[in-house]
Amino acid sequence: MTNQKTRLKKTVNRSQQFLNSARDLFFKKGYQGTTIEQIAKKAGYSKRAVYMDYKNKDELFMYIVAEGVSLLLNQVKEINHDQLSVEKVIEQFFDIYIQFSRDHREYFRIIFNEAKPEIIQNASIRIQQKVSELERACLNEVVKVAERAIHEKIVSNIDPWETAGIFIGSITGIILLSMGGSQTVFTQDRLNDLGKRAIQLLWLGIQTQHENGKQRLLIKE
Image 1: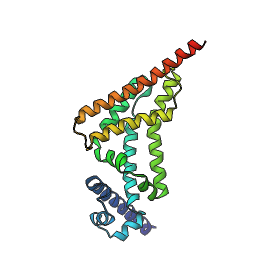
Image 2: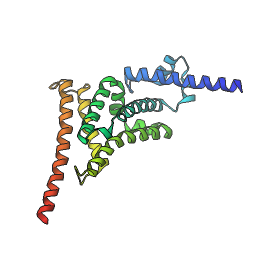
Image 3: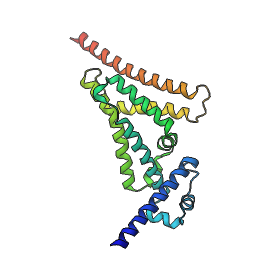
Image 4: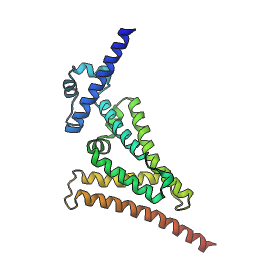
């Protein structure tokens, strides 16, 4: 029994060493610049040993993606929805998202820029499901705001999940532009300001649609 526990502990430690090595390399070299051989060498094991714990490089990469998404989820869950207005929740979510991209730049990059569909599909079903659940949980934090806005009759005629996707997509696109794109017109701070402005305009547009809808109903009546 003691020997079995010892072997299990060694396996867990080895698996974690591979993750630590993979994280360092993916952060420094990116997905394309990292190989299984490099991960194994950095961890102090053979290439064969990596395949004893992980299906392939893509699976290791997705475990690091899961770490980042989990970290972001924990932060957005700290928003106190009960004590803030809808507008303030949206503003706080944006601030957390921006700060995450600054404090955890490499996690942000691999989650939103490098985690391509072919990489996800080539990982094990278990980690695919884990990442999917984490991403859905993050999106659900925005869905809750949209549903609350509908409930409080601030907006109407919107699909909460679609709206959440548009919000996240808008913020992410602008942040990625500031993280090394070819643009040279705006500074990172200016791009962050543009991101906040984009969300404000989107929110204003949704509210305007709601007000126009009420006006059409009044005219019809």
